[in-house]
Image (cartoon, rainbow, N blue to C red):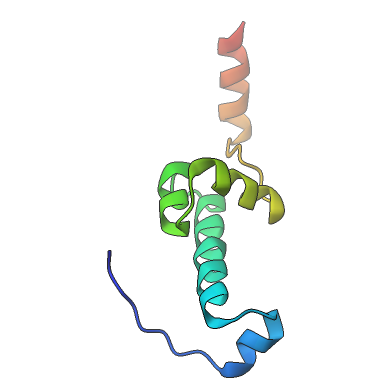
Length: 84
């Protein structure tokens, strides 16, 4: 796993009421959720980036109000058509 050094203002931790370890964990989850929402990562890869199991990642999606189902209207219509 690659290691990154990121400098953040001390006030960021206080604003979110997180210690640095919790902050880093939340930052990974937030980035993975956003990249998943933008269809840049699959659910499986986003869970890996977040450092979570897939089930935990789906829970994080719910907590952050992002649907675990990332279908375009056309893809959804096709899936529903194929279900018949």
